[in-house]
Length: 400
Image (cartoon, rainbow, N blue to C red; front, side, top):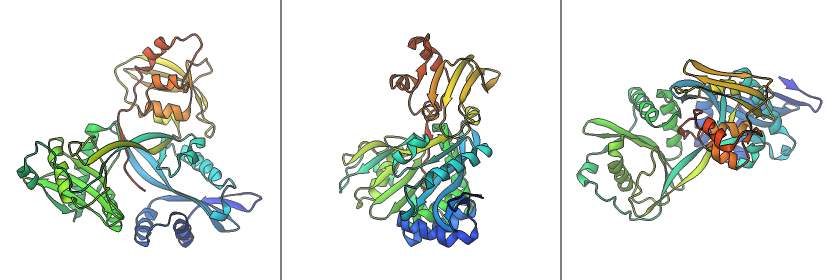
């Protein structure tokens, strides 16, 4: 617990705070009672909620929901920051700054490499050096009746059957299958287990949808996670690659009377052959490096040998702000502080966007976000920077 002379206290919530947390969430986000009952039942079991009080009255909160990321096959503990809210009469007094500073401090002490969030407004988080790391591909069905995808055998589509997930065994089977599929396409994704899919199905059902298993010829070929509030929203649709065209047409048939449906997908495009579907990419998840040295351990080291001195600017986590000597060799990956001169200088958010593969190094140099030492020509610098391993593909579709 931390208090100051303004009668402000920062602490982690406990059972006595549930009613106040529920009230503040409702006032700030206006979610349905069904969704809130689901969220407060499932997420308050294992998350942590950092709160700021004034004279024992809740004024601001941050929910820290634990997830395990798979990063190049390694299991990495992370936190999804949600429920960032301040009482309307207490805004613009620095409450969120205080809570985020405490969040950074506690996460660093816990050796958490990275945290992330889905911003309602990115301008709130960029001053804290959060940056976009994941853009979601979306296809929007614009008209009815739909146009059929060409060159797909209708008989194959008829072979596809769907049923709601209905048992722990099916949820575990789905977790094993999806982790395997995602690992083939993404360096970084949120690992799934049976409880993950139990929670996802409950979330969908509170939003008028469900979680469907897709099968064909007696074999699981994919799944569809969807909600249906004002519009149909297919939140995830995954399938074996050879079934993509058939599943795309199955989707258009199964939901043919729905307009404006959104289709976040693993592989893009998914149903691009349909005349009434248009696709786009939208930035959706921002991340924040908490412990630079821990995050470097997650990088996909290849059979290369190089070294580089990197000056990192971090305005919020002093432990990251330093010049680091990064040495990569077939024998290992070393990232240590140095007193020597730097080869490149960048902010911690730029470092994340580069290493996550979101923006390439040459583009960051053009944007003057990566600065080179004065005697280093850009062509020579790029020869080194292009060898440094970065992540290829992130997929973070969770809502809370």
